[in-house]
Length: 335
Image (cartoon, rainbow, N blue to C red):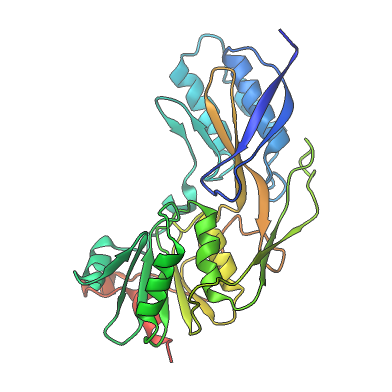
């Protein structure tokens, strides 16, 4: 058997910008506990993109967890050690996939108030809202349009967006609620953002990993949104966010925050600004990790989230009164 093997690192369809694959040479590790540990550590060492930003000493983490691995461990014990190791990265795009469990770190939203209530949402929506693919929408009683988009994994087409924009065109402003949207297909984020620009607009930057070193990246590449050929929104937009806004939804908020007619209201987003790639351990367990960092228009990373223009939390007092504090604040700032 060759001393080298090919590990194919495929761009995750969760962000879905492109569907491509790259091939890199990796040292071959034995399919035993130590071999799988070393394989995981090395994959992350050479391809993960946020070591410097998060001030992580990956060599120290290797030493910490290597001493916990031995040949007598069963699969669950090995999984626990490997999952704990990658959990040190505090990255929702870093996962270990097996047939029996998934290693993850979801502290980006689990450690914070949800700032969203299903019961309040149902109360505000009532029974007379409309549904266009992944969008739920209606006109509130003060003539403000309201659209809820719960996941960028839910497809939206140009026809859906035309219908929503035309239906809400007579309203005074648009509230676009992204709370609890943990991401999905970045194509839909770009498609929706294109309804709010009238000319090609710079909305951020990204980089690609160019080598195995922690600092081996390409130059910054521009991210631009071109205006849609369909119906475009020309009035004020208020985007509602909470900590569960992540990945492709985080990117969408980044796009929108760069537009002058848009106001962001709610909590910081959860982040997730690394385009995820995937690989595999000798035992067949899957690994996903952030590989391509993305930045806002000021060339600042959004991996740790995006701050709103107005920080507003859902208050317990309002909750008991059947009021969504964040929605009501958004309504109050519409001229």
